Image 1: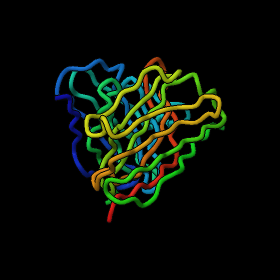
Image 2 (image 1 turned 45 degrees about the vertical axis):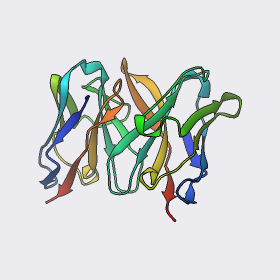
Image 3 (image 1 turned 90 degrees about the vertical axis):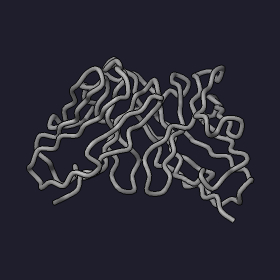
Image 4 (image 1 turned 30 degrees about the horizontal axis):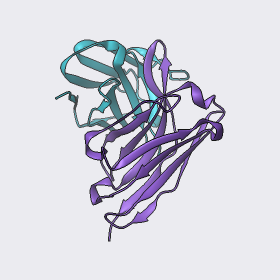
Length: 106
Length: 121
């Protein structure tokens, strides 16, 4: 079974701090198909990162993606108030999302 | 400006049917595969179905196969999801989303605002 596991489930941080979110695949995958999405409360998801590391149009450079094989990371270098949201990774070929990481204000 | 607007949601009894629509504007609708993604209340995202540009190919998540049918009308810039045999576990916000190549990689680059489907007696 093709599964993406995100950790932690919830990350409690203060504005200005660094956030590190993990997405682990159940088997090695091509980074081409790994993306990250942000969802704020009551809103549709928004594409942040495609191909594991390429920021989508208009995404600030405080967001960065990295990783390969089974382990991928989304890093927010300095949290802004508008960054508190739920983040999902997605393997596009599997059409499988991770269960999400909520980044909340500490 | 690209817009995807869903409609057709609402309350339906178990076993009932509903047809969702997604109207696109500001994009060349027939250039891309299109998907439906859903989110049960308080839960994560689940991909439901997708359809090729010309409607000649489609795929479904196992839990909806045989009950849901995805279709499109490119002349009307519209995507549809016919949902039959609805179950309580189909209760969710349903999003339409465009599949595109972004920075050389596939992604869902545009999403509708979502429409709520509630299956309850």
